Image (cartoon, rainbow, N blue to C red; front, side, top):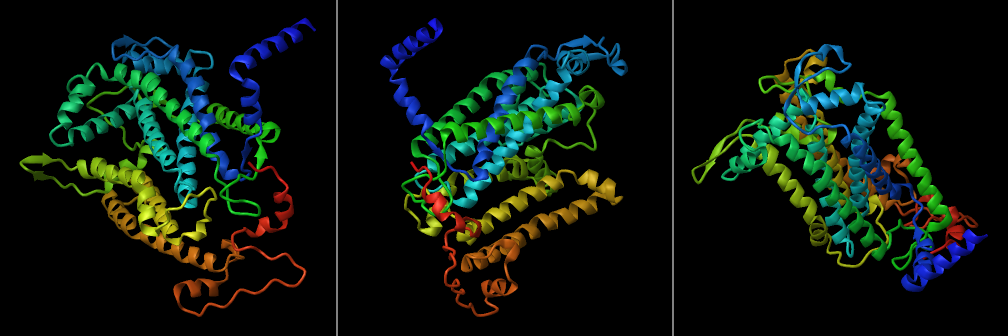
Length: 490
């Protein structure tokens, strides 16, 4: 009883100075859309929380140094070997620290889920047009968050000083050297001398555990603050307008759903960490500059760059007397061009469509066939480049010369994505013309109409007494008009 009274008095004291009750009531009454795709961003958030928690544990045992040490841990094949302190501590984490291997693998799997969720979330934003005015700023924040997370993933992957990560780091060093004029200076400054240098691990460690996580956390906070200020978008449907949000209140419905998602993310990542082996550094062995892992591929989030490097022809040329080495175009110029297009996309989309209005209702994927075609093209291109990063494995599986595999992949990367984009464009046009249809039930004659091979027929009128489908409402949402109209909106 006394504790309860003290708690009430303390709460009133805080509320009298911060108006916490008003802020809390407003926060608990906030409405969130119900569609499952809006949870992709939360999966990324909870994966980042898992990354921070497991990273703190790992930092107690990892030694970010290239100083030589004699290994005396439990892994017998390395007994008495002279290893870098970073690699030796990674092996000891895996075999001698209680729970160390579990936390190492959970950390790695969480990084993959984190980046995968960000990429999937970005695709949802792109295909539904949620980047349109007034959300251009949040699109820029999201793209920066994606790039920062990619950088931190590569830095963390390179810390362990095993043969696989060392090979990747050497590729990164070569890419830096390929930048004309400033490349050699930048590489020398970062590595503290010629590759591999003695300072790179400690410098990457500072980036991985301090600077980049702080930047990621700041970007996440900014992303969420802008989201709260501008409110969520939502999909077209009954009662959904640019002036409201239809869905579930923060408390209790959405809060319990979000907590369930957090439990699910933790269950999946710890399940993978305990059951699915990933990055077994003791198998790769310590990094030695004279050796390289083959066949070996980076994690998927860097695979598209690796694929471009492997497929791009070796082409060197000079500009104003400066040599431009062959890695520059596939590893620097083309990725930079892709990043610039991503940053500029809200304005490019506005330039093409002429749409300058403010939008809080998302577009359906079928509503903008051109945007859908570009997105399908980009996703297909990235997927094929990721596939090309395994050309040596493909050659081994097919028992074919790797040169032939590279030749076929070059053709596929150039030819297949435009075809996929064209198919997506035709299907989107057909679905837009017949809003009562879904992709799996789309009639072939509707595709013919989109291709101009047959004349369009007027849509059938709904039978008397039946609920007709609104053009902007998915078929499965039509029976819920009365229900949605009575839900919370704000």
